[in-house]
Every structure is written in C-alpha cells, then in structure tokens.
Length: 203
Image (cartoon, rainbow, N blue to C red; front, side):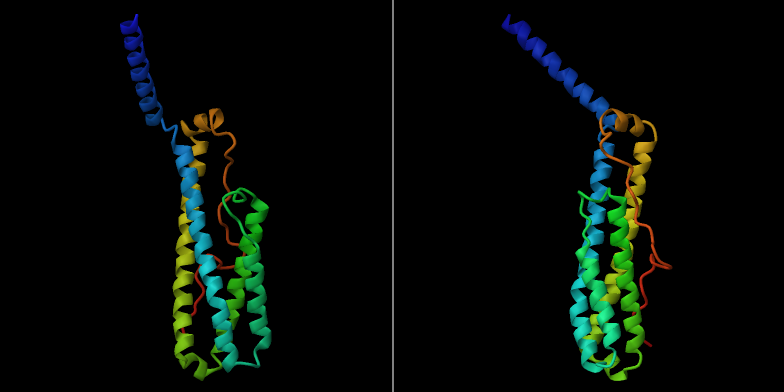
C-alpha cells in the first residue's frame, strides 16, 4: 500500500511539473510579468520627475540672486513645482485615467514654467556665467533627457502589456485568470511638444 501511495505521489508530482511547464510555455505568466514591468517603468518616470523637482529650489534661489525683478516668473515656477509634487500617481492609482491626466498636466505646466524661466535668464549674462547656475543648468538638462527616456520606456512597457491582454493567447488568460487587470492608460502629451525635453542650453 505504501509502495502504491508513493508511486501515485510521484506520478502526481510529475503531472504537476508537466502541467506547470505547459502552462508557462503557453504564456500564463506573461500578463503579470508585463504588468510589473509597466509599473516599474512608471516608477522610473516618477523618480526622474522627483529629481527635477529637487533641483528647482536651488535653481530658483540662484536666479533670484541675480534677477530679483523677475519675481513673477520665479513665483510661477515655485507654484508649478508645488502643484506637480502634490499630485502623486503610484502603482495603486496608475489605472486611474483622471489621476494620470492630472499628473501629466501638472508636470507639463512645470515644464512650461521652467522654459519661461530659461528665457528670462538670457537677460542676465552674469547669471549665465555663474558656476553654481551652470552646474544646476547641466543637471536640469540631464534630468529632462532622463525624463524623456523614462516616459518612452513606460509607453513601450504599457504597449506590450496592452497588446498581450488583447491578443491570443494572452486575451484568453486575461479573461480566465487576470480579469482584474485592466487595459492600461499610456502617458500622452497634454501640451504641444510635451514629449520633447525642454531646451536648457545657453549660447
């Protein structure tokens, strides 16, 4: 009896291993894998936007020291930063289209405010030559480029995820096992040229 039980257990184990291999080969794990990749890509978008937000206070203080008469422009940057950092979209709210749109709009407004600040800076040669400002300007330029890359990677990750749950066999697995995972919104520009990194170089 023990021998039969042992033999049956081994057969069940072998059958389970075979079934697992077959299911894995059919793409049963693709959807959660792609879902996690999209969330990770979004995390990088957030990281780069936060890096930009962290640079702004020092940038504003440096400009203020040379361009005290540009208070309106400086205030606009500070207010846009406050609004952008007040709207957070994490993995739990990433599938909320309205929340994502608000986040995008706030970040685009901050991008516009920074672009206007850089136009103002052109009027102050001493500021443009300041080493602290040049370092901040270089960091901001690099961050804007990283934002563009992170947004592109997120869009591609969402595209792969959405394609998987809309095509066979992913659509089948989605219906049977992952119906709680919706089609995901991508990162769309909400203003003209919003997908391009702002120009922050000086002649």
